[in-house]
Length: 140
Image 1 (cartoon, rainbow, N blue to C red):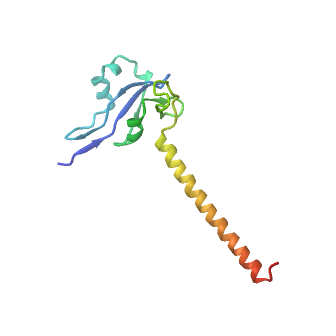
Image 2: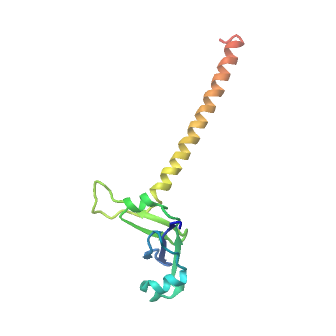
Image 3: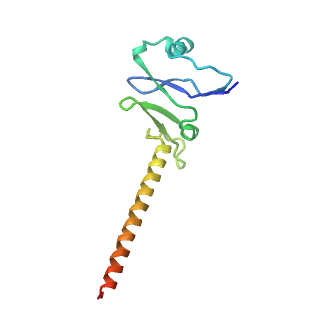
């Protein structure tokens, strides 16, 4: 028997983005529930009009580090994406604004750095070609 890995579902208020239910991740001898089953299972959903909440379905392990390091999260109701609040090490009790997951920012910085390195290498190559041409053709 293959052990399943099921990502979490995050049910949220469609007006505020506040989390109503986080189903958590499951693995092993588990089964995946349907959205209709979740509404029956979770009282917080049963008590609400279905038009008043939305759901994000995340793959198993998605945003693991963000969930571990944040002190809160919500759904941006316009973009339907997660936003996290991370504690400030200098002021751990002070509430912090919600922001794009740091894991996404780090990945974007890696891409930007790779692009900058590529651009720098291309610039170096052009400069070397120019210098070679200049000195091969009499220079100064």
